Image (cartoon, rainbow, N blue to C red; front, side, top):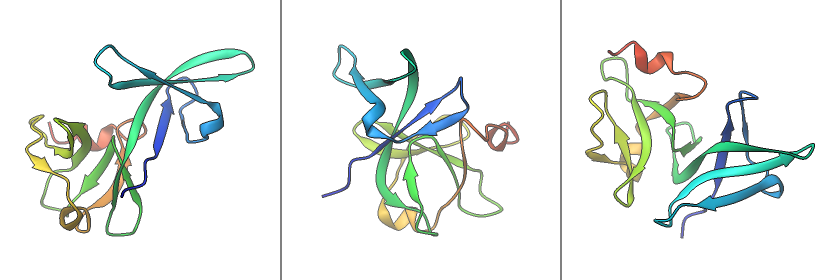
Length: 125
């Protein structure tokens, strides 16, 4: 059984939150988790939710949705996403055909994330 964890990106502060004491999960009409809210100083903020894939990269680092992953120098970077009931790798053409599995994850390295390092993906286009 995999560990269920989330992290939340706060655009206004430019940082991630993982403290579950501060978060409130919101679910849309389809039952999908769409936002996390937290209150600090009485002000509620919307955050982008990213779920732990249950996998680690080649360095033993937890892979979350939104992480930018690299195979090596000659292969374009990929982004971890959750789509159609599984974690997948989004390629530079916005196709998510490759399912993220243990054997694949062990060959990948997290080099950033879509919030703090968007330039890693812009260089491909």
